[in-house]
Image 1 (tube, rainbow, N blue to C red):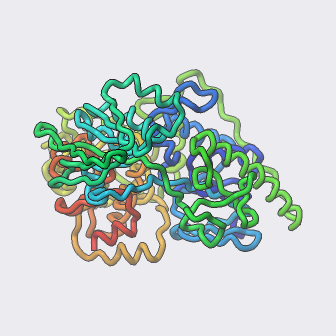
Image 2 (image 1 turned 30 degrees about the vertical axis):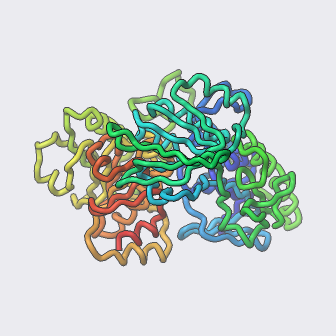
Image 3 (image 1 turned 120 degrees about the vertical axis):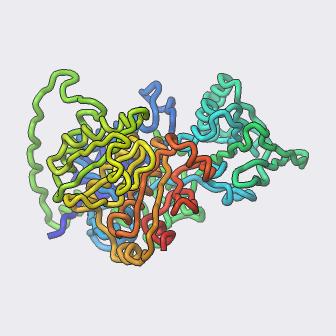
Length: 547
């Protein structure tokens, strides 16, 4: 008999996590489906200072605590992309890539994504100067000038974050004043390298490979002015923060949306479809902040509990008593923490690695003059301890040229994977998999030596259709929340098709590669060291690129 959850939450941002906390605490059988790294847009926010009761925190830290809190209440998590839904009937059906999830109620919390402005050159220079995530890409603009487009909260906050890297930040606002709280705007006074130009819009960006010239217009006088990169810098950045568009295309026709795609709900977060709720930034609302998202999630979960309870009573369904959890032994402060990985993460990884069915060898070649190479070795030693299925083989640079040639190791740090027969699995990491990239590293192991993430027949067909040898490098930054999914997708293709080799590249360690391809934004997909594609892409999209 297929398992039916009390509530299925689609989206792991603040709204979804809050719904999970409230549903889990109410003893509902709850699952949260996350497409990518948890946290949504909040995970990219460098500073949160307006969340009640918390004086100062970061987005990743706040959503990380929400995630742990939901888990503590028994909430399950599934990584996957929803491709179709069926909300008819008492049991709702959510189809992932190769998997079906059933629920008596559903909370849609898929959030919104940055809106594009549409100026001339925006598309052409995305990844080469035009960006939408300061946390992901800010470091690439160290000591360069940056323009921030927008007048709202996000524009002001991200301008302040970018001021840590850029030599100068100019906020371009078409409005006559900022549209966010004055308390946020007042913080700009503490940043000497931030300038503001109101009643102004960007018209065009141009250049040879990278942005070198931009045209702006004064909305009052109609006068145009030009900014050109200095000869010393050679380029500058344009960050666009003009709001978001709801990620609701999948649900149109299943629930009612307005003309802009936002899902319409009542005050209890109910949509027009029974048992279906919506929470967070995908709803029409005046204020889109973490605090309003978590409020939506709490309200949706509370009403969903009543709905499910009534529905079970109507159908004569009785809940089975929840199994008692084993009491964890008390530990002295600091006990269990070891090395690079926190004790809690180590325990989680042991659970994942417990599902491995095949032996896998991690092979690293260490350049003792490279600090990151030495750090990677220490990280891998800790990973090896977590499973009998994992072994680590270490060589010093130049010690075994045959191994370096076999695994195509030509840059450091580096770790490659081989199977029990010593065959290269065509997956490598050039960087220490910290931050969001820990997810992609663990999933690489799970997909090579465990059951693996499920693939649809369509995806398998696309992967199998790649007939020629291809190398795929995914350039990432460890603060990029979009990058792990691209790394996992590229490496999954390599795992399934012997023609493909996939590498994760922490681009901060490889300035020559960054300069060669003018990389100013991540994720960036480099194919055969000759062509480059910017932005998050699905497995199917990457497979299409490789045909």
